Length: 203
Image (cartoon, rainbow, N blue to C red; front, side, top):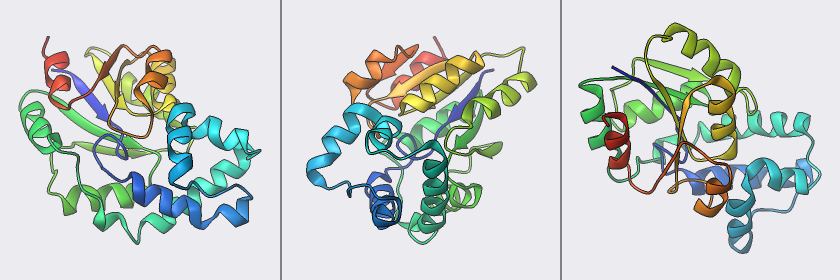
């Protein structure tokens, strides 16, 4: 039995447009250009952290922005739907493995998404700040040190946090980041379809 930890936005939840809409609401406050349609490709190619750094948004400001976005998303998370194939995958995995969620979204937003979409397969839900996933993953791993632990994400932060924590990283190409960018970060696995997670876990 493995422990499989999922990021939410970009892995379970097809919420990219909702996220971008929320981020853009605060562009004037934090002095960065709105992420318009012609900037989305750039955003995906370099990742969120690098994108905001490029526009001179400090880590402190990015943490503040992240909190504002979480609060704003509470008004639209009910619109978020799981990616095709996710519900079937979770149902199959839950028969033999423990499933959790770790996201930099808020715990209340995660719970709303899970409840609204009837994805009631998770034993635990964890939330971290924008840069705090590694610390949370280490704590989780210590509780399951006799089992393989996977973290499934769609961003550079997810891959880096998994590596720092000694977890097996699975990066997905259907989320926030471009596949070519993810490949450069050397995750343990890089996949294009949810069902591939089932194959990896059970190989």
